Image (tube, rainbow, N blue to C red; front, side, top):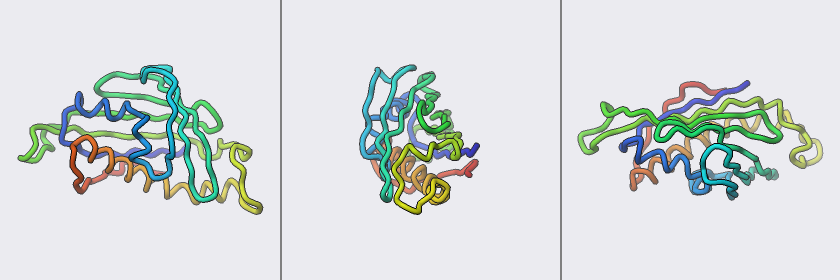
Length: 173
């Protein structure tokens, strides 16, 4: 299993931050390779999302489900088709990290645990002479780039202005 765990500080309280994390339908604004999101549910446990991804010559719709929601601190999800993966968004108050220009701060954690080798080679139509192993090797470093991009854009949306965001990498494949 591979694991990505990244965090950053956002200058808002958890109650302000959490709705942004829960609004998966806004995620195409944050992610370069996420084209569209479909929603079946109200955002609570059991809500299912179709996440239309594209990269290089590949496109795929990931199917995820929210497994637990504990506002304003945690949202857990898992992929329910094709790839063994699960993850969580967490928000922890961290007022000591607020600069003098902000009233408070929170730390946002994004965690994803996945088995890249659980991907069925039939789930995407690969070009001739391209193996699933090659695709996995090329995607690994891009996953970290995408995590960084999503967090930076998410923070800008939450705070209402873009700033340099320090992304702390706790673990990566």
